[in-house]
Length: 77
Ligand SMILES: [Zn+2]
Image (cartoon, rainbow, N blue to C red):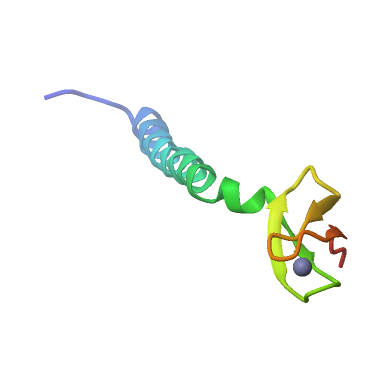
């Protein structure tokens, strides 16, 4: 039988637990980024001419309304 002292057993036990936790952490972080990053990169605009609420790319501060074409500023909360 393999003999292992308690300190090595505790180190392996804690190390395996931490590896599992960090593995799930990285897996769900990558999965979350893949699924929701496109939604996070969009910001909301409100057309002051026709009242339509729409989203567009984050880098734009002014965006044209898809319904009437009026240029609207980004909503700030
Ligand atoms: Zn509009």
